[in-house]
Image (cartoon, rainbow, N blue to C red; front, top):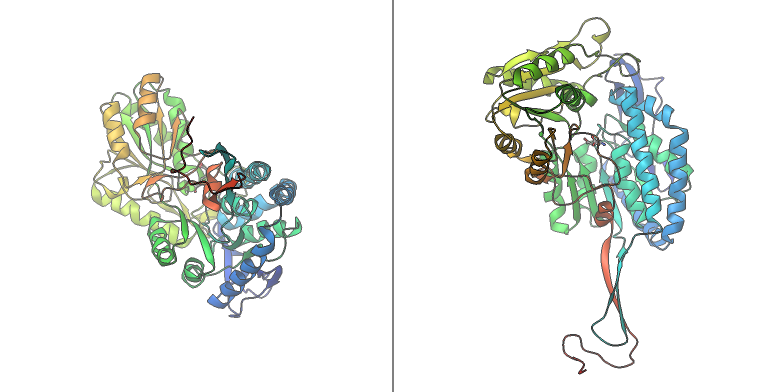
Length: 502
Ligand code: UN1
């Protein structure tokens, strides 16, 4: 192991100060494309650190909630502009710690920019309702109010975009935040929080605590001060978060797993569908919740589709995401790579036909990273675990079907419901699938990835718990309604009882 002595040490951000954890312990952040490359050393925080951060957030809330929303939004416009000017630097840092290729990390920072501009606009909207009262000389309206302290727990696959989806709408609505980033991508979190600090977000309004999921996550989901928990990650951990937060009746927003399907009909433009499956299946090394890990193909075009898909997957250039020629980077961590390896074995044991990849890459420039070949299993059926369980890696299961109805049945036959897509030229089929796939996101003639920030993002069934983030829907997570009645009649008027005669 190379020495850590010269590594940059990064701190927690609590009440406007960068400070080490009370524990005195740290953890290393290493490049998944080359584990000799030590990116930095981060704080292994304890419950005490989290409690300090929560106290800072609770105290800052009393001032921040009263700052007019358009003024809060002005600061956010500043945040967006700073992200624009530092996009390239942040993308490079992100590729180094997360592994995905530079074009994708640029997209990740861009998604944070888009979200921040969008939400800054909400500072002058955040519409409520004004409605007529049933009584004379009475005024009725609804307004959005903030909730208080929000815990934001985010994954490593979109290290800046996903934190922005949560932190920025929380702030524009007038809440304060304690943010726990994933332990394999804390540098992007530091970069983001530094921008918030430099843009003038007051102390205590945003706090960041790095460290272990359980040690840091438990107080974030149970402490009395917390009113909202917004979590993106696995369904397994999401259930723990939900149960931990339930006794305190916290508002819990969960964004969890996916087993997303691309359906290819016999009339589809096959070349376009192959492009979509490569991007949807192997983009971000398959590490998106929206990744297309299942492809259902009409039997009439099954063979030609598979030939093209396999040939194109085999020709993908795998390597360090910072190199121009790389098309697919490593898995984010050893644990993630081991999950991929485990599922490849499961697929083989289940009798699926391995038609591309299947191996870890360990030679030459791949020797020090978590690289794995893009892998395709053909002739998969719905009972196989590789067709049902989220792998979060470069493994795609291809399944034949005989009709649109069968494709839809297969598409829906998983516990998740995030994203789905259909390739067809037939508008009737497209609309039928659009209606009948029970997912939160649907695409026609495009893969399952590529959501834009101004529409709701989230899924059905075990993917979510009924909330959506992004777009106007994010405001529903980070605010709650207050209905207000103003009686200017000067007398007691009883709703439902004092009915006026005409
Ligand atoms: C995720 O997969 O965790 O729609 C987020 C997309 C991206 C966001 C994905 N804009 O694929």
